[in-house]
Image (spheres, rainbow, N blue to C red):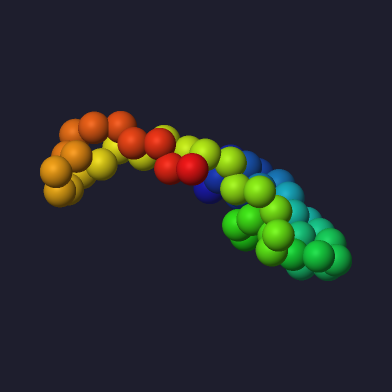
Length: 59
């Protein structure tokens, strides 16, 4: 029991610290490409339709 508390307490403290710093870090995380920025091409694996099983490049 003491061992689990000794291991769990530091993890709890670190988790609380990380949540606190992320909450008050100013700007939140950014999702996606900003308006007006260039979207780089990316490859996807098609799973349906006539190109099923092929790798496709979206530009």
